[in-house]
Image (cartoon, rainbow, N blue to C red; front, side, top):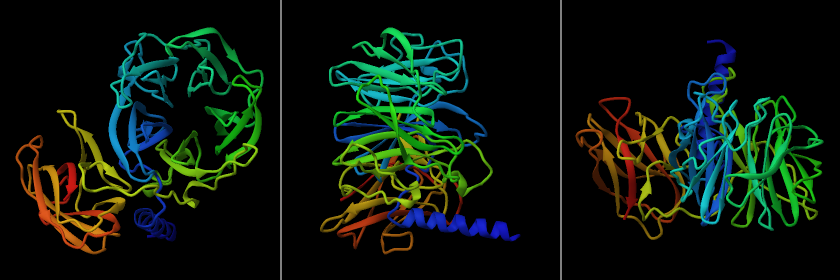
Length: 444
C-alpha cells in the first residue's frame, strides 16, 4: 500500500471515530445522500426537506424529495420520500428533482419544486408529512427560452403578500396570490444580482430586515447574503455567512430560528469522502448555529466541521421511537415497507447506531423492539456513551418468518440511569449482512 492510501485510510478511520463518538455531529443524515436542505419550523419541530443524490450518482442524479424531523437538532427521524418527479403528471424528465422549499399558509403546506428543464411546479398537502399532490397539473413558472428556473424560495411578508424568488444565474421573482398556487403580474428579473450570487436563494424576513442568502462565488461555493429594506430589493451584499473552501464545491443555504437560536443549513461532501475523494455529486446536509450582530448583519460561520452542533433538549426513550431515528448510523439504510412503514435496513455485522443525549432518569429495566427477520438474525448489544462503553443489555433478534412479519422482542437492561449517548451495536455469528429489519423500539 502506498503512503497516500495509508494516509487516506487513517483519515477515514479518524473521521468515523470522531463523528460517531464526539459531540460534533456532521453530516446530519448518513443513511442517504441529502442535498439542498430546506428547513421549516412547525409545531415546535424542525421539518427538514431535502433533495436526494442517488448512491451511484456521478453527476446530478435526483429523482425525489425526502423529509427528516428533529426536536433537538442532533437526532433526526427519517420519513422517507414525500414527493418525486412522478408527483407531476406533466413532467417528462426522468431526472432533475432539484432544490425545493416547503412553506405553510392557512393550514396547508406548499412545496415548490424545480424540475430542471421543465420549470417550477407546486404541490400541496394538509400535513407537513404529505402526501403532496399537484393542484394545477402544470408548471407554476416555466420560462421556456432558458433553463434558469431553479431553486425556488418563498417569503410570506407581514402584510400577507407572498413572493417566490428563484434563478441561476439571474434572480427572478413573482408575487404569489393568496392561494399560493398562482401569481399576479409579470415575472420580474432583478436589474442587479447581489454580488457573488450564483444560485440557491433563500429569502426571509427577521426583525424588520429582508435577507437573501445564496450560494456565493464559484468554484468552490460558499454561502453569501444580501439585505434590503423591501422584499423586492434593491439588495446590498453584506458578505459571507460561510466563506468558500476547497472542502466543498456546491452549496445551498436554508436558515431558521428555532428554540431561541438561529441555524444555517448547507452542503458538504464529507460523507462521500469516507469512501472516495474522486468527485461525484453525492452531497450531505449540514447545519451550524448562526449569530446576528446588533445591526442585523450576520457573523461569519466557520466551515461545518469546525462547529459543534449542540443538542438543545434531552431525548426521551420511554416512548415509541422509530428505529430510523439517529444522530449517527453510517452504513445503515432505511426503506419503506409495502404497508407504508419506514424501517431501518441494511443492518450488517459490526455496524452501530447512535442516539445522543438520552435521559434514562432513575433507570430503565426493559428494552423492546419490533423487528422482522427471516434468516438467522443476530444480536443488539445496548451500550452507553460509545460502541465500547458499558453494556446494559443484549437483545437476541430471532427469526420472525417473512420480512413483512414483525414481532415484538424484549430483553432486560441494567445500569441505564441518567443521561447518556445510546448505542445499538449489531452483531451476528452466522452471517454478515442484512441481519434484520427494525421498525421501532422503546425502553420501560
